[in-house]
Image (cartoon, rainbow, N blue to C red):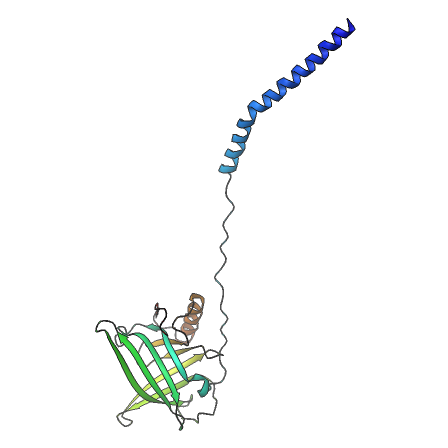
Length: 219
């Protein structure tokens, strides 16, 4: 009799264990489904947007004629009737023996499919409107004056900010509303565009919107 009782107890334990395991196996898919549903309906983590990289502008404290020479691309400008149809604008500046600057201005007219070339001579002037030797360094801004028809007509271009490494320059052109950005490369990145726009606006709050060149591979 005791052996029968022991056998019955052991059999009961095995039966209970088999029942629990079977119940867990049957419930496993439902548990997994519920966990997947909770994971899918959980609120996603808040997206973090990194602020645009700031550009710290380093300005030249002295104007150097030698460093200012060379090829410049007009990468941004305010749209005014006299130049809104011109594209691929560039300036090549060459220093003359007398301190004046020979400038070769080329641009493209897409409507007529023509390239234009204009050559002029500019005299650099200091803040007081006086000429100075090419080797003499002055504080910006620097005005470049083009005299035409003998000195009857003069046109001024005021360079009011220059990069410390002479990679870009901000220029106030002749006439009302004429501003443009010169660069050593045909295009400049968006963060630098924003920084230069803010700098120009601080100097000339009434400046209109700058239109940036979108052409690649102009070199």
